[in-house]
Image 1 (cartoon, rainbow, N blue to C red):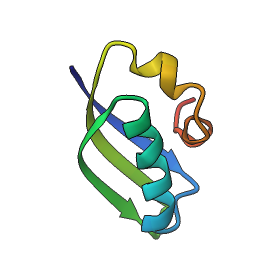
Image 2 (cartoon, helix red, strand yellow):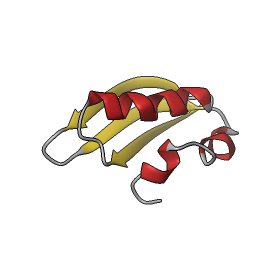
Image 3 (cartoon, rainbow, N blue to C red):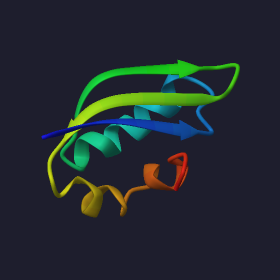
Image 4 (cartoon, helix red, strand yellow):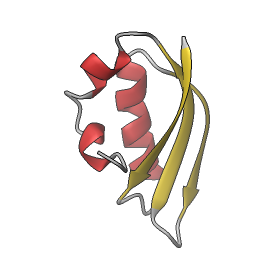
Length: 69
């Protein structure tokens, strides 16, 4: 497993981040922590992921909101 920090834009509240987190988990990730900055509308998820994570995660809705994508 590899540790990643994923930052998402268009994240106005915890509900948004929960949706992105569901896609991380569905792609094989294990979430260690998450936080929303409501002023900046950015959410951050720290997670551990398997080697095939990106192949699966790129097909999710959350991937579209990943900063730097």
